[in-house]
Image (cartoon, rainbow, N blue to C red; front, top):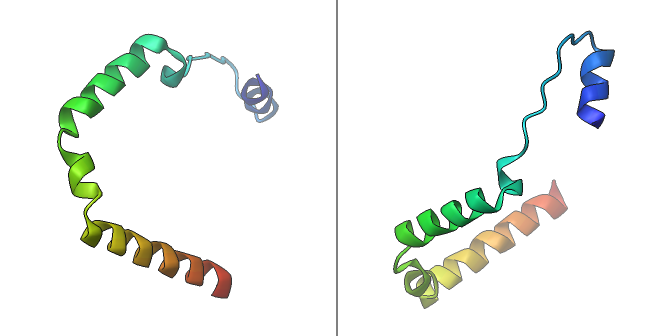
Length: 69
């Protein structure tokens, strides 16, 4: 409802509320099914030592950029 107030304060005339998709259990179930279908086999690949090492390197680089930036 905060968004509605801001909308009207800035000259908005007709406010229409659209519920968030991620608040609907049917949408979440469908999203889950799609993700499972398209991610088949990824978990084994993502747990490989090379991928884990690359992930750690990227995390360290991001941390360094944040602390020095």
